[in-house]
Image (cartoon, rainbow, N blue to C red; front, side, top):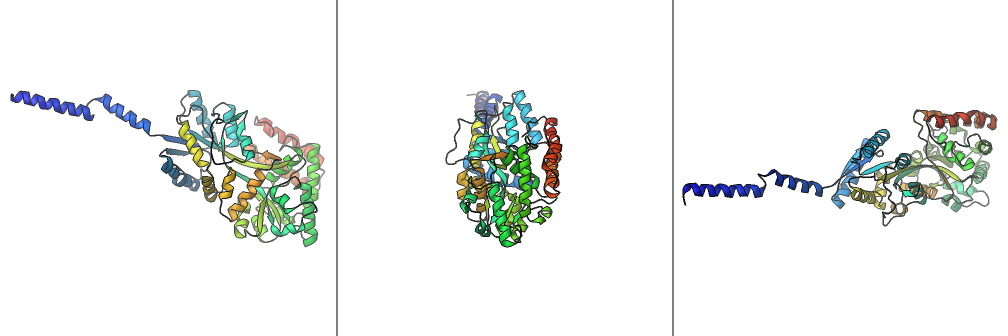
Amino acid sequence: MSRKVRLAGVLVLVLLGAIVSGCIGGQQTTTQTTQTTTEKVTVTWLSTQLNPPEERAFVQEQLVKEFKDQTGIDVNFVPISYTDLATRLEAEEKAGKVTIDLIADLHGGLDFFASKGWLEDLSGRKLEGRTFISTFEKYATINGKKVYIPWMSATYVMVVNKKAFDYLPAGLTQEDVMKGTEKWTYDALLEWAKNLKEATGQPQLGFPAGPKGLLHRFLHGYIYPSFTGYQAKNFDSPEAVEMWKYLRELWQYVNPASTTWDAMGEPLLRGEVMIAWDHTARIKNAIETNPDQFVVVPVPRGPKGRGFILVVAGLAIPKNAPHPDEAWKLIDYLTKPETQVKILENVGFFPTVQEATGAIPSGPLKILAEGVAAQSATPDAVVAMIPNLGEKGGQFTNAYRTAFERIVLKGEDPEAVVKELGPQVKQLFQEMGQEIP
């Protein structure tokens, strides 16, 4: 064999080897890259919740990491504002090029997205080993479709010093209060507060009615729905007039320092009141400091039911999401009882599944979670969502505080006051193009 022939043979072998190894031949290289890309999935998760830096770090360093360790699926967690989420989802759905796999947002936002037809119906998917609280399930189903899975919640509750149970009115038991039965009413609260004042010589009921307190949430989200069935629709109704008369009568048993209190944790710890209403975050210190002294209970019910504010965050899959099955696996992980307990312990949002409450270790968080779960599960619930009125939100809450000051503190005629303020409240919703709740 000549030298030229041997050289040609070597070149042929080298060329064949290069082709086989992929060093030459663009088609082969592209094919390998494509195969690698399709095997690796990253779930894109946009969330309006858990956006502050410390909460974001918890999601990325604990939740996302643990999920990846368990499933091998990467997650791109994207904190986003309410407005930006709506804008991006609308643009992607209209363009038919959806990149979002999972959305976490409050009920109001998800309700809006569902009304536009942008969310998958999750009715056919199942999650084993958990029982969602019935009230959350009810609100997650819109027009017969399961448009989101309840994920986290927050609310306002009543805290009771156990000593107060010694002064319950006739016919009302501690169990009635703890479970929120039909006997636990605003009339019963009035009798209980009266008994406490007569027995101790001091008013023992307290509300955060100070300048930075959240009394307005009690007014529009609790007592108004309990007496009128609505937050604002019946603001100036005869039922509302009766409600204001009741509240004026109740106030004689309320500690007058309430108008200076912005949060009820400290007054409870100082023993200035035995019963208080406030946001869970604002009474948490009392429970943590003395968990053996206090219990968290559902609020009373009124003639129209048991009104209370519920802040619900849910998880939804957009229509045409690129990785719906992987997104569902992430939903499965985020709603497991043990994950829900981890969320409560780290960022203070309450579970949406009953099994999680049982999994919380004994202590302050368990006391809070049991009270929240009991209130959320009451069959006579009249749930109120905080209206999203944008820049007009201050005018909305100010109307309720003004009515309170004029009727309860200054003794003005309730009918005249609500007739004056009612049209102003309703106009706020009309100007924002929203249904009056």
